[in-house]
Length: 140
Image (cartoon, rainbow, N blue to C red; front, side):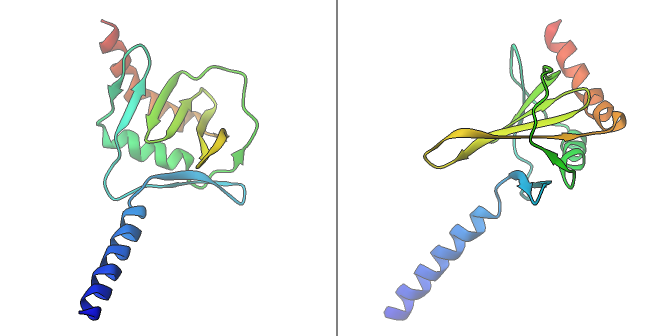
């Protein structure tokens, strides 16, 4: 009986560990931005006057490649984001020059973590190319 209870407790613990690895994680480690994504694509929402779910896999892939592995800058620019994206607890602002990421600091800590990554014109254009038709169709 003890072995069965121990086995069930072990399986329960392992299932919780497995669930954590399936969460989206965006942040900075040693000055470099990382974008660890779960096996299943999270819901991506284009925020604005109305909210639009972004279904396009190419957008998610382009967003990951535009952020992951880039040098993170802690200074925020004074310009306004052209597009605002929400993925889980992360707010992502797409600017002409790069991407800003904002997310809560942690449990019971009031405040936000904020960083930016500079991107090439080609990287930003690839993201804008996917989003522009979505915003023009919702305005019509």
